[in-house]
Image (cartoon, rainbow, N blue to C red; front, side, top):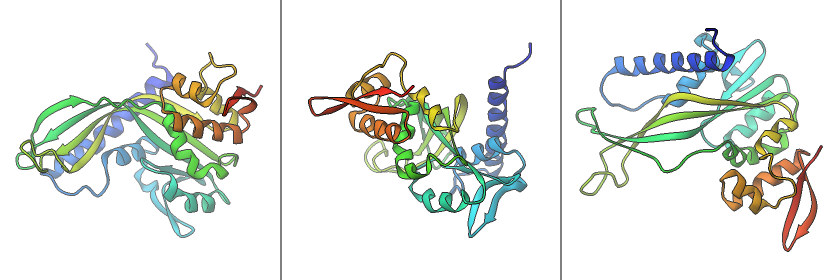
Length: 251
């Protein structure tokens, strides 16, 4: 049976993961990682040719540079990207790739033996709408037609060392690495209207509290999300309900 395009992407993700984890296994022991596993895997996933990784451009270093296009892998805050993106977007198409962990397992590792001694599922489950927290830092750039955002919803293992305080050695323990296991969904935002996919279809006229409840995020992030969507022209303010703005989706 022929694989779908997403199944192919999942296979590519698995191949990239295996390459990185095999290299880590060959190094043996526990030391300081020069590059965390999620970042390393996503670079190979987005561009298998490693000769195109870490390319100096205009005083910065692009994670990937191929065919006059830049790809930046950003696993944390977008704030450090602002100056780099503003520079790159003058001359190149730029894609920013951001992973969000939907399902995460916390693994405790004995630093002396390198063995995992316990595992437990994390109660925190990521949703695509977490991306708004990062987009806020670069919102003046979001309408630039050269900028694309890719959100990868993934399953992960959070590796922590039993080197902390207390009887269980978990207090202030080292967060050693986060290992990507599986690609669950890939979302691309290339135009402002693409962000409509982050608005639940059952919402017609709604407040930030109603948006937050429907998308399983907190009220503060709901307010911030609608501010961005409003600036992008995806939603508009049509009324007020008490002190809250009421929004609807722009046709």
